[in-house]
Image (cartoon, rainbow, N blue to C red; front, side, top):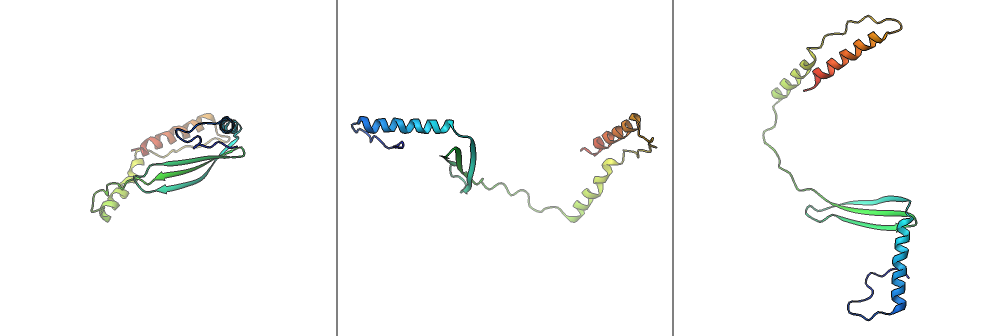
Length: 135
């Protein structure tokens, strides 16, 4: 007999055979937990904002199955009105390329095959460029 979470009823007299079945049902559930080899999310549902999150779990064979209910977030602050003008956007875009202006060209003649010193010069120039592009 599987475990029955509503047995025995409140203030009821208990009997040994149904209680033994309850204990055996609990033992079966515990044994199933030890035999789980995989877990799987079967469903994720969006709940209304403010609702409590939910989770249902079940075991089928050796697989633990989950179904989640995740509440939607509250509406955030809409932010400032007015936006950005095309001139403002153009000014920002036009100035962004200037970050790399301080990095000179490599100007390297590479040996064939390239030497360790050749490679080190490329690495140093790349590091210089990366640092210049950071804001």
